[in-house]
Length: 115
Ligand SMILES: [Zn+2]
Image (tube, rainbow, N blue to C red; front, side):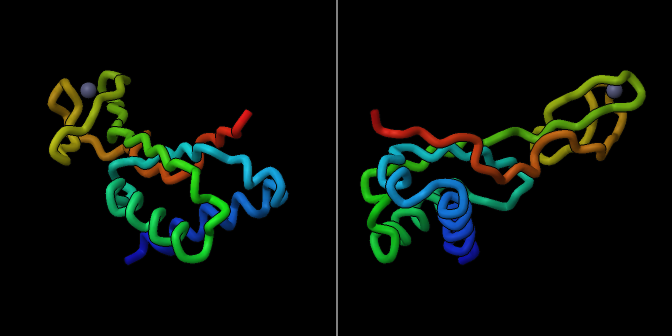
């Protein structure tokens, strides 16, 4: 299950940015996950809870918030961006395009601390 290693990577990046004292005050971790990133938010949540329960107890009261980003493609013909629905990579003008401008994201977009 690759979500487990993704979650460990997230904690790893937080380790390198925030000292332990501050990490204990993190109450929310916000993530942006593109539909093309092959990450299932529900599996990510499960992995998060599993890792917190076993080796990252300092994050026990922390919540993972995942924002799923739709896939956007750019059309050179009409110079517009459109959302990909059902993995059909076509512009609203019906021209096929595979110029993905959004959808591959897998990143921490923000961290909230306790007051
Ligand atoms: Zn177009």
